[in-house]
Every structure is written in structure tokens, then in C-alpha cells.
Length: 78
Image (cartoon, rainbow, N blue to C red):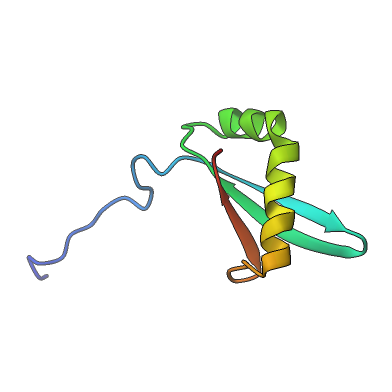
């Protein structure tokens, strides 16, 4: 076995939790992902629910501009 191989855990420190939601525009459904800095999924979901309207506005604006990566609109914290 080579000494140059380093095994690290799959999760990175400080990356936080993500919340995925679907934006409905008429009959079209668009997947959105909000990346947060919170340590728990519960904290991230609570934050998302508190600011849901703002995130939906940002997601709709990004969809209108065509800012979609791999079929997902990526969002970050406000």
C-alpha cells in the first residue's frame, strides 16, 4: 500500500446543511437547493421556513435569468 494515500472522512467540517425544495411555476416544477452554515438539519429547515418568501423570490429571479446548474437552482443564505 502506498504511503501517499490519505483516507479522510466523507463529510467536510464547516460545510453546513442543505435544504432542498421545489418551486412551482404553473405546471413547471423546479428543484432548488439552499446551502446553509447550520450544523443541524432542523436549524437549516427552521431558517428556510422563516425566510421562505425571500428564497422563492430569489429562485424565481434566477430561473428567469437561466441560472440553473445541473437542473438545480443553487441558493445561499441571505
